[in-house]
Image (cartoon, rainbow, N blue to C red; front, side, top):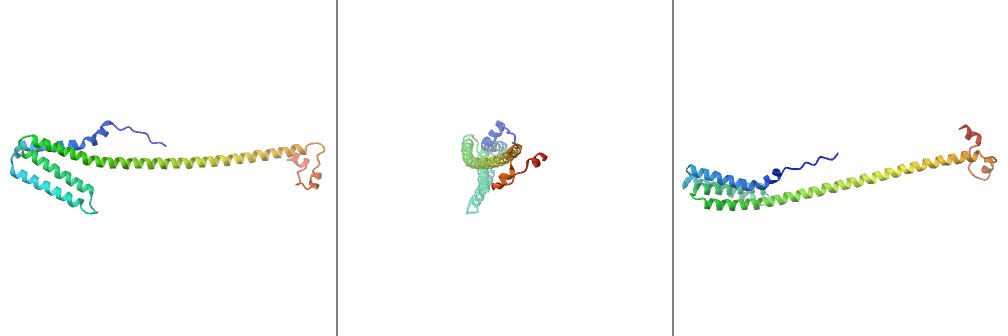
Amino acid sequence: MNEPIVARHWLAHATPKAAPALATSTVLILGRIWNANGAEHSLGGAVLMAVLAAGSATAGAFASAGQAGDATVAGTAFATSGALALAGVAGYTDGLSLPLLLWALATAVAYGIAARYWRTDRRETLAHHRQSTARREEHAHLERVEALRAGAQIEVARTGAAYAEQLATALITRASLPGFDPAALTQAGLPELPTAETTREN
């Protein structure tokens, strides 16, 4: 039974595309809220955010090093480092020009990283779709071959039954003809045919 085709809402398509901009905008807004609540020119807050950002970047570098590196962990660590750096700058500075510049840069980098994952996901989805289509076509081909084979067997059986019926009708008709002598046929070396009386009894 075919599964119903469900059309996705346009928001379901747009939300993943807007996620990087929403994330960086949220960090910028939180940084500016922090700025308005006393973080402006706060050296301790700036040092704290710098240490946290450097720690996240170091963790990302360690997670991506070597053959056993985990790309997901490394990407998360680097994203956290960038978010902390953006929040620190947005909270420490008094103007909006530098935070907005860093926000634009962070958004561009986030979209660049996300585009790579989107391409990989799209390739995997297309490969899965092609494999599913190939499997369906192969199964459909096998079903068609089996249906043709079964139809051929049915036709052969019907043909054999029709031939046997026609042969029996011909034998009965010939045996009922006047002057027909089955003994003469037997003496001529032909197989023995049922006599007319036996045929009529049957």
